[in-house]
Image (tube, rainbow, N blue to C red; front, side, top):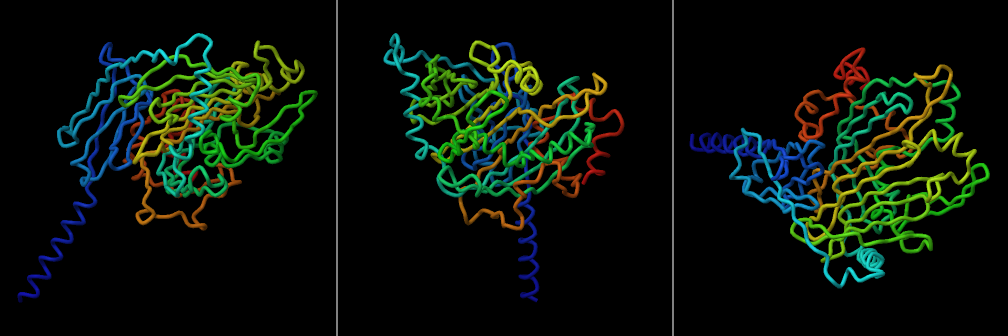
Length: 452
């Protein structure tokens, strides 16, 4: 009898422990400025001790799900130019929407950094490059992330496709070849494809098939591919140019004789001074935000303007009129990249990357019988970083996503329950225009079920 009683208690304890282990809390909130209650987009909201976090959306909103076991930890909200906000999770009322108000923090540049005609910008970038291996992971780690891809026609700016997925990214660090990165697609869904293509346009796409955008967006991370450049010469019409196959360019900032690197001003992040560097070299320009203490690169904005001179004129007028103008945004840039890094256990890890690039050609809905281009808007938001190999559920070869297949080729059974409760998705809702453009015939829910 005692044995049966003991066994019963043991089973009950096991069930209770399992229930506790599976219990999750959901925190909903919005990040605003103290003055004016202006939404703060792209603020990092996370639990630093656990390597977990999300990024606030365009209106400052976020949703964070976390296990009950983390309830004794602290929540930290940080954003460039603002004082960091920290609060114990135990003090928060989860049934309410948390309103976080960030105070701006402005620091003056040190006198030593603002000497007339100084080379401070180059000095800072040079030091940041020297410390890449010290500041960024060189060992295997795993990222859990949310991927979103939206496709938009160039002629009438209507959205024609949506794809979303929850993925695990296994990476050996900045020393390892980017080709060794493995991606496991855990959940995936996609809408109907509303773009119409001719046989010739489809054949063109097959001939010049690009790598899978899920892999491609990772090779847009300048820090990740800094040591793995493959440079080759290309010729298009009468124009000859050089292509960095892995979109390497950090080194070009210092090496290119025509480059301009300028220390613009100073801001703050997480209580530390951050240098704002503005750079430009032929066909490319952007901004770097570098921590003044350890020279870690926190944020990058980068634009490619291939086909245009620095004064805005075309390198090759015929080429520009026939091709380049059709695949650029407002005739200005062909690629736009935003990258954010978040520090975790002494290293900077990818936190968020957003990439706008040219897509495929299709039939124009505006001009009968004409061809138009498209834009692909891809984003990858990391919500958890795992650095302990023992705790990782490693990505096996048979689980690895095909590197050459298109994101449109990914097929996964639509898990309606998962998507209804996925915290990262709740924090990054679709714009109303995307929904309107894609749902004039049937709901997205119906499309997701049909395209699994």
